[in-house]
Length: 60
Image (cartoon, rainbow, N blue to C red; front, side, top):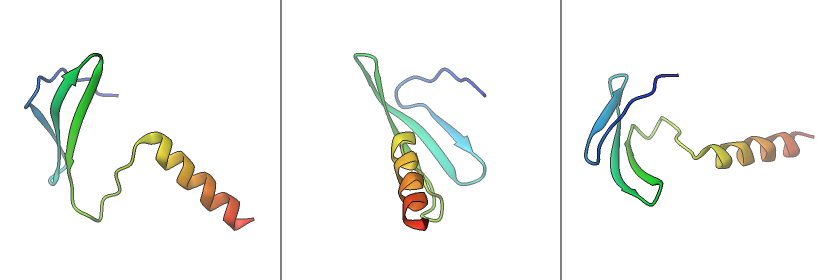
């Protein structure tokens, strides 16, 4: 895992077309913005886990 330190307003670039920007840091929480093509799925990990569980359940 790559670990980076960024300040508010700073960005990192992933590949050619994904930009992740630190929008706000407040009380131990970080708000980020993700600029990516619509073809790239981006979810919070807990939502992705629910989606996968739902797909597995409907496949039964």
